[in-house]
Image 1 (cartoon, helix red, strand yellow):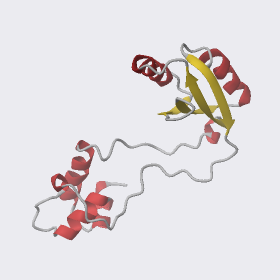
Image 2 (image 1 turned 135 degrees about the horizontal axis):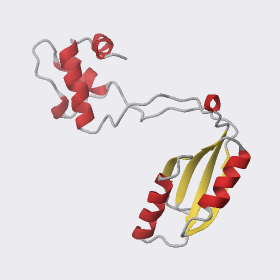
Image 3 (image 1 turned 135 degrees about the vertical axis):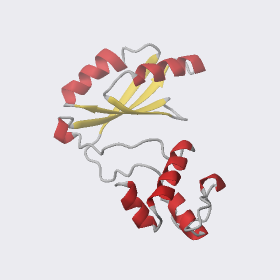
Length: 162
């Protein structure tokens, strides 16, 4: 949405709204913007979650694996885990054969990979990016508050939470 629409919804004028959005970006609350792409529409009909165990969990080896994973476009998410496996990868592929090629030529062939367990996603019933934000919470960092006369504290708090 445009800044003007966001300001209208928050009940403030556009200039302080833009300042607050920029403050949220600079403070690291907003990391970026993206389009929600339909993988099926672009020919990526398979999503697989791969649990990866490494031979070594030394920090240097973990970093090397993460750097390698970052070079693979099919891997959309990489999470380091505590427990039986070291990493959980979300991988998209055109079809099962495409995933199997990736598995055998890239993932299991990678240095330090000891074992991989794949789980094929049948469907996604919930996809909600971000985190659950309580819009009624009064806790806003002071650095995000705006001292402009036209806005009262309640409006400032509401905007910082959006």
